[in-house]
Length: 46
Image (spheres, rainbow, N blue to C red):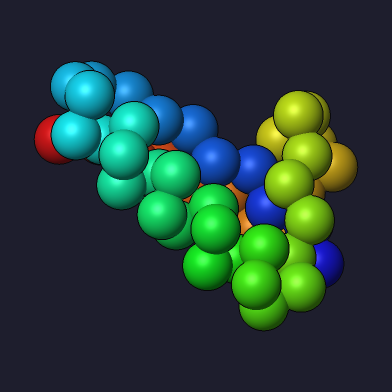
């Protein structure tokens, strides 16, 4: 499955998104640059 991760807000959100992305990668998900190609959309904000 593909995922698109959008991070909005502060540096803490960037760190959280890095962790989320790492976990998804470990579970076999693939990041994509275009949200239209994603099976899962994640928006991380304050």
